[in-house]
Length: 227
Length: 83
Image (cartoon, rainbow over all chains, first blue to last red; front, side, top):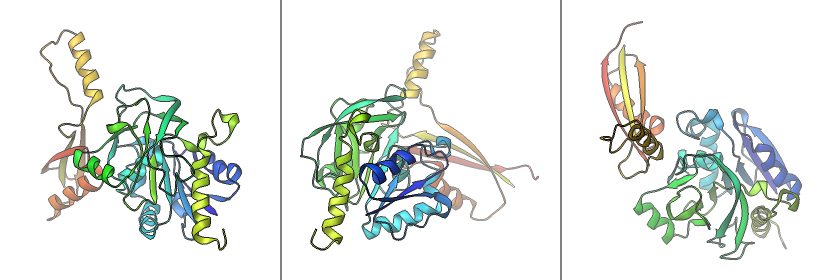
């Protein structure tokens, strides 16, 4: 399986994402500079965290207007798995690839620590290796992770099972404790916590690895004969 | 040239923790009459004269300058200084 990691000016979790795909998962991965990125031929696209364009205007807003995001829209339509983490989630929201928005944390503090997440939906290509209701330990590191959407959107998210992860102890004020959501089609996942920072025991948790393993297994089942 | 002044504010009902913190500080300074503060953004755009200026500004606000999920915008178009 071949992963693309899109690198924006100010991305700073790109190498962690690359490491998760390449070393922890043992698959092919390329880091692609946003300006000349060609997303053709990749089986999954990873949008890493960081501070693209210094969070100018709104987190992710400037990056969401770049040409590579036009390609992302096409890939999303075609059903290619796309994972956005932290600033990557913010970019996907600003691009309209996922519903809702992220506000400043309720307590106005940058927070960087491990959180317990609940796997609300394990019927996705990103979470099939988890149990439904499983509690996993994944680090957060954000200042604008307070997920917001209006009540109508929230009802749709619930009705379509688009809420994939929730916080056990909501750290940032997110609506309905939401930590991660998918698009309606289920091939685009955005989440504030960092699964790529929890892929082996030496990092204090390997709970994030199952997310990448789920992506790999679903890809194999779909494309590799006899898998 | 036109000078476009754009105000971007959080929608009603969207929590503004920053505004709350500013309100708390004003109250601490003794301004107890302040019951709510909402923090927004103000942008100035210098734009070439164009018949479609308002339509373009609306588009820009919806596409980039504001996030319609959480923010409202208002703008005025004034005569700018020719450079």
